[in-house]
Structure formats: structure tokens, C-alpha cells
Length: 172
Figure (cartoon, helix red, strand yellow):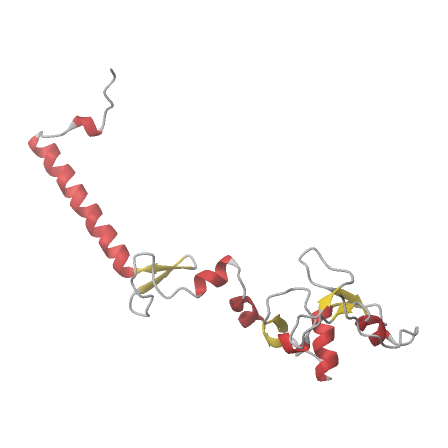
């Protein structure tokens, strides 16, 4: 059962029009789900009296706090529900922090503290190459293995003990 806020929806009261499109749930800490228009990413959209279309989570936060979101900041959904308008679930944060809190590929990688082999990404053990982190311990191990294989191949060529089965397939 949907519990919708009943406010004055006269033509001049855009706030009432806004809250008529919010399902506030049945529990105190429920998400307040936007029932109106949404963009392709699932964020609610609302047209203000001046004609500007704004994210509903931004409108909800600004109405609840009677402040404007600082320039360059985003309103983060702490509940991770994009259509939520509950001001208790919203927090203005710098854009970089909002991206880091997300679930994008880059955000997940940025949270990693160890390489796939288990070595820590510390200042001394991390090299940045083309915008990517690389584990120096793994790079050294890979280079060492490559040098050993190259030496062995060179020795085999010098002694004539080349095992050509690694180079050719046998046909039956």
C-alpha cells in the first residue's frame, strides 16, 4: 500500500506537486521512491517553476535543508537507490568522493589495496603506468622468469640441445 504525502497541489504550489509524486513508504527509514519521470539511468527528474529540470534527489535535499547544493558537489544516495528522495538517505559530497563511493569499474579498482597475487599496493611497491597501478614485486618476478627462460633458450641453441617438439606439432 502506497502512502503518499497529501499537500496542497494548487497551480502555484510546486512543492505540493513534487511531494505528490513521492511514495514515502510505510516505515520511518524507508526510501521515498520517486513515482514521476525518470531518466535513462533511473534518477527521478522534476521540472521547477522556472522551467529547469533537476534531479529529484537534489530537490528533496535542498527542500529539507533549505540550502543549495554547493557548486561542483553531487548529492550521493547513501542507500544506493537512484530513485530515492528521502533526505535522510542523501548527502552532498564532492564529485570525486561520489564517484569513489560508486560501483563503477574505476571505483571498485580504486578500493583495492592488494594486487591479484596478494602484494600490498604501497607507495614503495606501486608503479603507475598509463594511468594504471602495477605491483613492482610482480613486475620483478615476471621479468626474472622471462630472463631465466631466455637464458635457457640461448644455452639450448648454443649446445644444440633444442627440443623442437615445443616448436612443431606432430601429425599422426
